[in-house]
Image 1 (cartoon, helix red, strand yellow):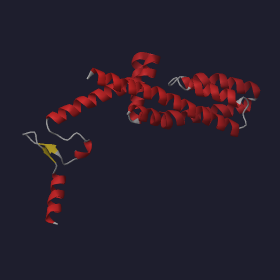
Image 2 (spheres, rainbow, N blue to C red; image 1 turned 30 degrees about the vertical axis):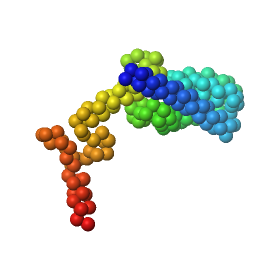
Image 3 (cartoon, rainbow, N blue to C red; image 1 turned 60 degrees about the horizontal axis):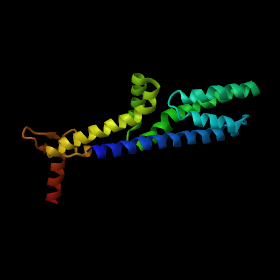
Image 4 (cartoon, rainbow, N blue to C red; image 1 turned 180 degrees about the vertical axis):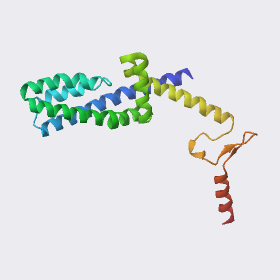
Length: 191
């Protein structure tokens, strides 16, 4: 059991790190194309800064955007304003759509649980909690899922949540009853 959990933990933590690197690379490339279209100065430098600092959860995008915005503001103040608006839109896309989707797939968590893990980890343990919150939560989620599946197996109940519906229940003897499936079986036998 210990070997299985350490192997799964290694898989989850590795998936998170790879997912975060992929997410940051995509943001760096999107930033490059966006800045090229907007005809900004220092396109390559700014895109690399934004992509690399995006590895840091929450604060990374701002750490990269502030010096980049100052650099562009010194070159052309109006383009600096456009850059700030572009980065805010890009980070909203990353934080709400791309990041949770990529990190959720790499760790086995839904986008909702990724956001909860980052907020909970950051609230409890600060910066380290933000970085390590998602893979740690994914490992805990996996352990809880294993325990629940094991308990359901011991009671001879279905493990897959698709079996359970509003009408299904477990009777006093511990038998799983699903009236919807029984009517389907009866209708199937009549034909």
